[in-house]
Amino acid sequence: MNNKLRRILKKIEENGFEAYIVGGYVRDHILGIESTDIDICTNALPKDIVKIFKVNAKHEYGSFSLKDGKYNFDITTYRSESDYKNRKPQHVEYVNNLITDINRRDFTINSLCMNSKGQIIDILGGKEDINNKIIKVIGSLEQKLTEDPLRILRAIRFSVVLDFKIDPKIIDFIKNNKYLLETLSFTKKEEELNRIFSSKKCGAGLKLLKDLDLLKALGINYDYVKVVPDILGIWAQIDFDEKYPFTKNSLDVITKVRKIIKKGKIDKITLYENDLYVLTVAGEVIGYDRKKITKQYASLPIKSLKDLKISADEILEILNIKPSKELKIIYEDLVTKVISGELKNNNAILKKYILNKWK
Image 1 (tube, helix red, strand yellow):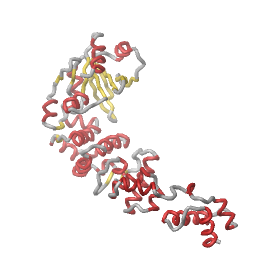
Image 2: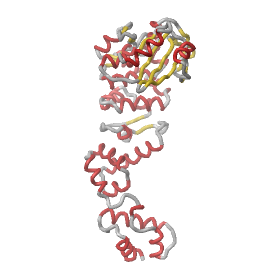
Image 3: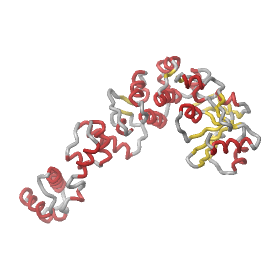
Image 4: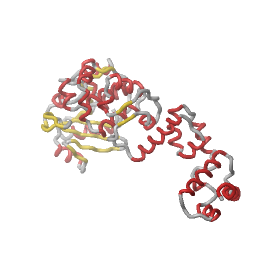
C-alpha cells in the first residue's frame, strides 16, 4: 500500500476510529489498474473527521473531500440510507457498523475494503466476482436499480471498461425497466456515456447499449459508429437530444466534424475552413491519415482572411464601391482562387485580378 494512503488511514485509527479504503480503488488494485481516487469509510463522525484533519475540507452529506498530491480522498462516515427520491436518500443514518455501510453500496466488485496493513476485507464475495469477471448487485437487485437508475448505466460502464459480464438478472431487469433511464439528468447520462465512449472497448459499449434497446431512453440514436480516439468524434456520429449539456465549444466542434463527415472528403477549402483539431477528428472518422492532414494544412497558402495580401479598404477603393454583400462574394472568390493555387497570394496580383473580374 502507498504510504500516503496508509498515513490517512493510520491518522484516523490513531484517534480511536476504524478506517478502510473501499470500492473502486481496491477493485482496481486487484486488477492491477492504477487509481488516484480513494474512497475511505470510517465510523468517525463528520465532527470527528474535522478535528482529526484540522482543515476546512469540502463537506457534503457527511462526506469530506481532501487532496494530497495526485490523490483525491473522499472520507465518509458509515451509514445506512433509505427512502430514495430523485436518486438521493431522504433518510441517512450514521452507524457504527462496517457491514451495514457495505450493504448500501451498488455492486459486489465495489464492496471490497482494505485496511492500513494492506489486507483486503471481502464481506460479500467481491473478489470472487472480480476473478469471474461478472457484475452483480449487492442485496435486492430491483431495489438498488430502482432507487438509483444511474446504477444501470454504471453496470454497463463497468462491464465495458473492465471487460466484465453483467449478471443475467441485471440484464433482464434493464430490458424490462429501461424507462428508468429517462429519469436521469442529461448531465449524468453524458458523464457515463463519455466514460463508455472513451474506453478501449467503446465498440462493445455501443453495441451493448443498442442490443439492450436503451438508445431512446438515453436520448441518443445511431446505426454504425466508427470508433475513434477523440470522444467528440464519437458524439459527432450520434444523433443526441439537445438537452445534453455540451459546452458551446464542444457543440461547435461536433457540428463542424459532422459537416465534414457528410461531405465525405477533406479538400483544400475544407482545410481552410477548419482548424487542425477539427480536421484531424473528422479525418479519423472518414479515414484520412493524421500526418497527411497536418502536412496539407501546413502547406495552405492562407489559413484565414487575415492572411490574404489585400485589405477590404483596398478592394473598396479599387472598385469604387461601398461595403456591401458584394465584398463578401469577392472575398470568397479570392480565397477559392488562392487556396486552389490559381492565384498567388500577392497584393499586385490580387489587385489586377479584381480589376479584371470585378470592375
